[in-house]
Length: 230
Ligand SMILES: C[S@@+](CC[C@H](N)C(=O)[O-])C[C@H]1O[C@@H](n2cnc3c(N)ncnc32)[C@H](O)[C@@H]1O
Image: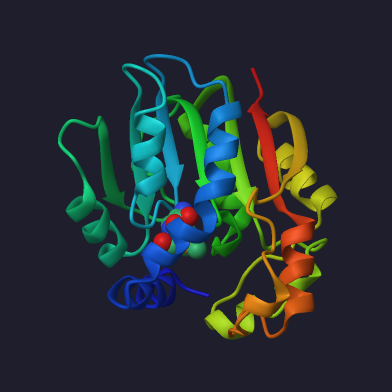
């Protein structure tokens, strides 16, 4: 897997307008997580794999004085983020890979990421970079739908045509700890809209049938809260 292939893949998603679908699909869980993240006025946030930047902007508006920087390997996603940006929001966006964050060490108070970290080309390097740019004791809130316990998502890498790290909850804990995070907690967050009605379900590439869709919605998203070591 290369950053070039990831950029090409997600540039194409941006050109097809799939960023809007992601905002719609991920929005409910992200808002639930944001409401419970206890963001403090004036904190600086990094959003890893920000896509069109909708969550970066939500983070920046969570409390007065918060600033947020979204990074993404896809130039087209970052262009989309800039086109949706409003000048009154303290957010900005940069093209960068997880594995080479263009920031000094100990820059950020907090980090956030939605449905992105498992695409890392080199996961231990990406988590090491995350630990490097966070202040001591700072928290990373990472949300994932693709993880080993969520078996209905196992087909996603084949559909997307890119490599994705399929880690169990225990493996994510070990990966964060190895990168310099001390306390790692997890919980599942379910979309408050639920799976909906079977009669309205339409099969798609990612969800071939109602049973798969329902199983994924019932499993919920994995919310990882990892605190950088002091
Ligand atoms: C599934 S999208 C999620 C986007 C956004 N967080 C959302 O919820 O709408 C994953 C994003 O991660 C970015 N990404 C994937 N691998 C990356 C890497 N190694 N470095 C930086 N960004 C990456 C992709 O370009 C894509 O925009």
